[in-house]
Amino acid sequence: MTKAENRAAAEAYQEEKQRKWREEAHANAVAADLEQLAALRKYLIFGKKAGIPAQDLIDAIDDYAEKLTGDRRALHARHHSIGG
Image 1 (tube, helix red, strand yellow):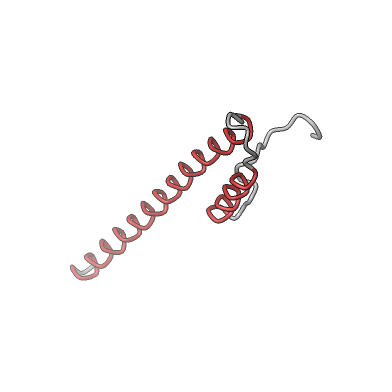
Image 2 (cartoon, rainbow, N blue to C red):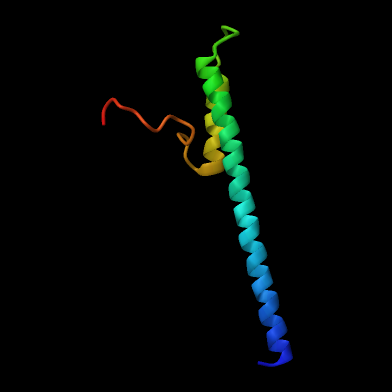
């Protein structure tokens, strides 16, 4: 392998490594956002301290989760004992 080929291969390797790092960082950021949104959504559903219906805000959170993941129900409870 010539010096130029070696340099090109090293650059390609570094670019691929950076691309994977950016993808992982983005996935971690989305996961962190979803975790915070899930906590807010749970508070709005179960912590009704203000006594104000929060359905509009819950729907907005679900819309945003759909934009992030493509799944509107990404933050909904997954484990139910009723209905199998």
